[in-house]
Image 1 (tube, rainbow, N blue to C red):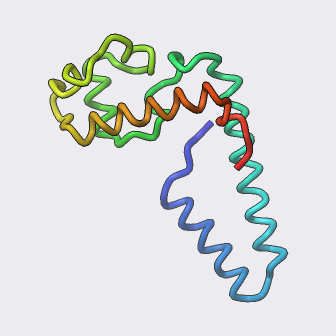
Image 2 (image 1 turned 60 degrees about the vertical axis):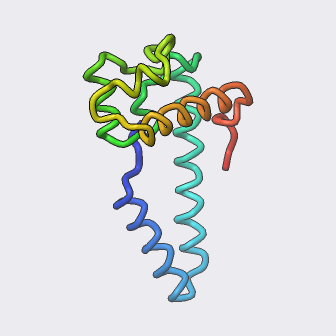
Length: 124
């Protein structure tokens, strides 16, 4: 499963915008339908690939590359690797400040909420 980039999202948005501007509502709807189907597919893959939140690689949390690099330097690659690591421990990691540590914490909390409610399996 690959993550869509901002550039790819911008291209798709522009395609939809052009179709709507030309009155091609069916074509715009088709593009949106394919995008939604892809999101649902990726969510199913995530559900099948990771039975437990601790198995989820941090890269799946869509954190900034600088955050991922700093955590990888400390041999932290999955949500499970963060078990027992405190907020203060993360603040001591080079290139991680309060904002980035808070981003990691918030992303992990959201993932855990999603696993608890199984909302990552649901459609948009």
